[in-house]
Amino acid sequence: MTNIIPNISVDCVVFGFDGEYLNVLLVERALHDDSGNIVFRDHTLTGYHIDRDENLNEAAHHILKERTGLSDIYLEQVFTFGDKNRLLKERDQEWIRHLNLKIDNRTITIVYYSLIDNTKVKLTDKGDNPNWFPIHNLPELGFDHGEIIEKALEVLKIKARMEPIVFELLPEKFTLTQLQKVYEAILDTSLDRRNFRKKVAQMRFIVALNEKQKGVSHKPAQLFFFSREVYERTKKDRYLITI
Image (cartoon, rainbow, N blue to C red; front, side, top):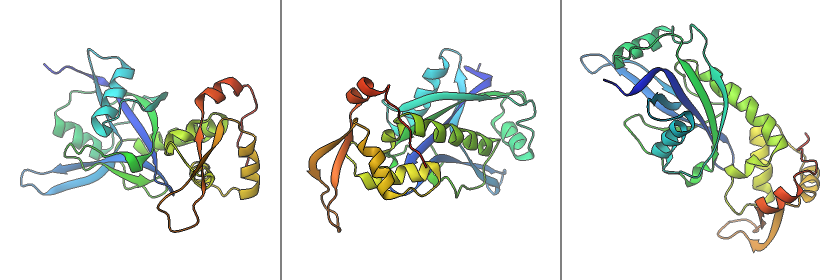
């Protein structure tokens, strides 16, 4: 007897930043016929049905740990998808039959999103070819995962302007140019360099280091780090990245 709850699943929208682009982690979904020929191939988010002996947060952490090897990762439950017809597309029905899953079309998916510096992660391949895709250049997606990604991105844009979550996407030590680029990638806009730096200068939790970049072909820039301690002391101060 299977140990999964067939009509409750967890999907993780894993956002990564590579220094230029905001990316999403996707895995390949490929269905073969009896002769080994491809029936269809597309991509999905990483996730699965939860086990009967784990709660939702445990399931999400377990999924990400298996895929990224990371246990200390920013993770937040953001919304639930449960439309009564969300699994009725022909490909999705074929996939369900292929896996021999006894599930209803109204499977409830609890969605989490997480943020990581994807240049520092070695993904675990479980035969599904995991890869990073730029948020504005996604491949064909299975299920309703396009809608899920769109919703998660809306949440990320709002929270990035109100809370210092972008630092989860950056290395521990970063330049102001890197910081500006990650905001631009999330907000999908260009920010004026001078105004942006004026705004950053007001954020006491962004601390300048007596260090500069190493091993770069251009003039090394000063490095900074995010101080969680200072942020907790000063978070009542207005924190908003204005466009």
